[in-house]
Image (cartoon, rainbow, N blue to C red; front, side, top):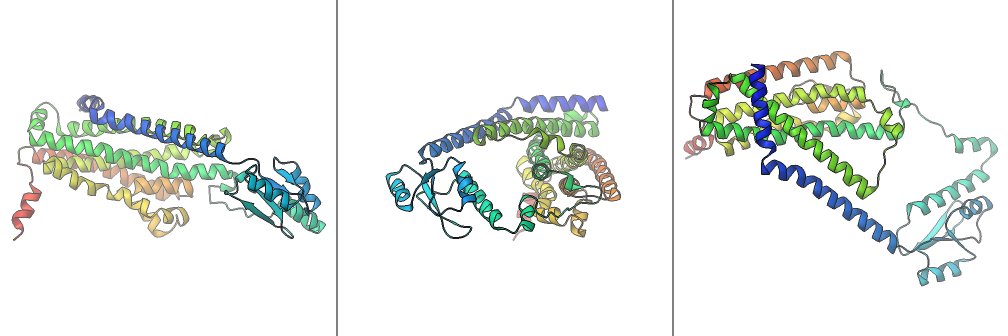
Length: 393
């Protein structure tokens, strides 16, 4: 049976991977991302070149500590406000800052304050405040009081801020990848099964392949197809980010990521896909009409969408009863449990219970899809729309 399921999986994968629909959506999205990234880089460069540089500051009236800081920057010094205003009117500077009393600057400009100028002014204010503070308080400017927050069995205080943000991104990216894989592959899956049922091709296949092997092969084959598409999309998104935003992720941040936990979350991703795919296969076989099967199959993915709508609960209240049940119930745990695993400390008994229920549900769903196949193979397809229309007055 395993060998037969493998042949079906290979057939389904090769049949769809060469289709115009797959090639268009798979490679069209990265091209679109790269175009957007290139446009963002071009527009950012154009705006940067059109910005009047440098900015300036008025040196008159500056406290010595603030003057020393600003003198070391690229800001252009002016002797007084009148000279700075004239330079601004002539367009030789983008704006200027003048000291406005204790610990303050007044900025005059034709454009928003750039980040670099804002950081320089903030550093000048900090130096001014530090020079005026009592000696006993000056150490707090260099090493302020911190609050250490540590989760049980997950000491987040050892992670850097960059690592925490990266972990948060991965915690949502991993379940989102599952959701996209399910939506894409199950659409092809339910359409193919319904078409084969409608034109009675599936009955010919049933004479040489066992129902469970046929169902399992279709689920695995289209699952691999979805992973292929997601991998190409991920590469395109990464390239677009590099081109458009010129972002770089420090190697230390990547090394500090909880990769074993990310790998552990793969258990729920695989189980979630098997459950959803088996559900839509059963619906496609039972309904028979491709258009109606697609409409009904959309409801099977609602369990994956629900945790995203309650993302705030999973992030800020991961130990609440609602979050716990979302991560245990088989239809929602493929999304909820990976988020909890990466952002909080999940008790071992909850993780084991969730994984066991999901595995059992996946096995039962595949078996039920095979049973539906055997039941519906020689029966006419269910015309749900006709039945509803006939029941209406």
